[in-house]
Amino acid sequence: MRGQWVMREMHETEAAPAPYDVDSPSRREAAVVFASPHSGQHYPDDLMAATSLSKLSLRRSADNFVDALFAAAPKHGAPLLRATYARAYLDLNREPWELDPQMFAEDLPDHVNATSLRVAGGLGTIPRLAADGSEIYRGHLDLAEVRQRLNRVYFPYHHCLARMLEETQLTFGHCLLIDCHSMPSMAGAAGAAGLAHGRGGHGGGDQRADIVLGDRFGTACAPELIDCAHRTLSGLGFRVQRNNPYAGGFTTYHYGRPGAGVHALQIEINRRLYMDEDQVQPLPEMARVQDAMTALIAALCRLPAAYFSTREAAE
Image (cartoon, rainbow, N blue to C red):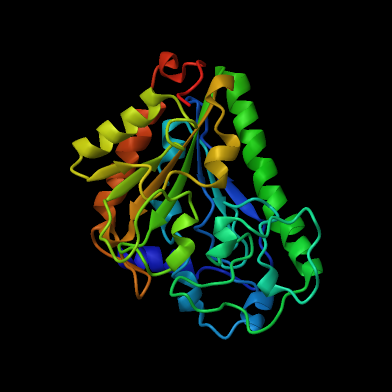
């Protein structure tokens, strides 16, 4: 099995790929959309020319193999949206203009959010730091290049995601976005990066739960939806927490509008469950985690319409 996953990761060319791909079901049967914004494996030449870090170091920042863990979504009637560009190149789970002034010699325009907690942690839309806290870039970036990255990768991905959610809601009257992520097994490696996904809690090397579900403290999805995910995963033997240390990032709070029938739930899977975090290689246990995510997909895709109540989520 290990060889199977490695072959997939190595199958890339230097030609610029599309900013995303979508695995669509033969027939839409579920009001659920799955998205994996951090599993992309394309590391463009301009990134590699501008950094002194190895590709392996940069890959440790990604949600490696997460798209594979949720690969069964189309078989259950739901699409899977997958980013193709590396998170170290551009982070799709950020506002479009969360930029760190330290990374630029020029003054940034007023519309840039330069003071967010994510920027302070070195993990803005263009990350400044790798997973181990190392500076990614040797020198300053050009704002014009950032605009090109946004136009080439960021906006097409989010336009596609918004369209998928709109089409799903038109078809079913409601929809649920599952934003799929992984987390390091120990807190503290990327310091203030703890705020990257809306963390609520502690750092400092604590060993984390197996899975963290984030609904922005009850504001991004109906309680029945997170309850279903929690119940399913706990029943499979996983230690599940809610909103600590991850409550949901930009995607969750931007798209989650329960009162309008659009729900969003972030899921973080502890990497130690399925991969060698240092070497970025899958472990034999990956099959168990993939089976568990397939069970979760099946449970969410079977939810009755009553679970998608349009009443406002708790404030």
